[in-house]
Amino acid sequence: MADGRMPSQQRGAGAAGARLAAGRPLPAEVGVAPEQLAYANLIAVGSLLATVLLVLGLILYVTGLLAPVVPPETLPRVWHLKVQDYVAATGVPTGWGWLAYVGAGDFFNYLAISVLAGLTIVGYLVLLPGYLRRRDWVYGALVALEICVLVLAASGVLKGGGH
Figure 1 (cartoon, helix red, strand yellow):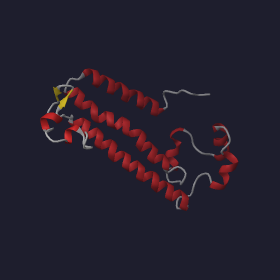
Figure 2 (cartoon, rainbow, N blue to C red):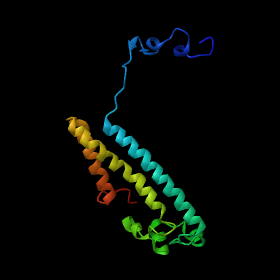
Figure 3 (cartoon, rainbow, N blue to C red):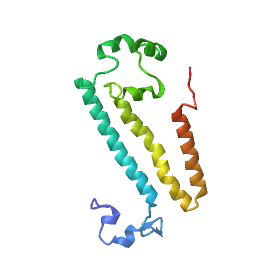
Figure 4 (cartoon, one colour):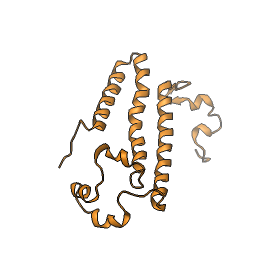
């Protein structure tokens, strides 16, 4: 390290020296299960898609190419209201009602948010068959339970935080 290089970069610290950790050799290769690679690819592509949708939604909203449900000039008069009062004053939908307004400038971004939120459930659905195929019952059960909880939460069956 006196010459500014890391120990593995110094002369004489070949592959054997670089492969030692705490006096034990590291495995030659680290294997990644195919479903984990599929999960990672799904998250990467889904995140990119959601980002593109968010940017597109912003452009469509700011330029006025998609008319909003709540006009921007109305917002300063209503954004301080409680949710119930805001909904009553603006007529915006609640729950999954936004799907009917996905073509509106102020609701288009919900599509991107839904893509991001849905990635977790879809990702778990990608992981589950691999765990079951390998008879990894603990991970399989955890993933199956997580899928159930997320689907129930998204459906509105599980409610909380009502204050």
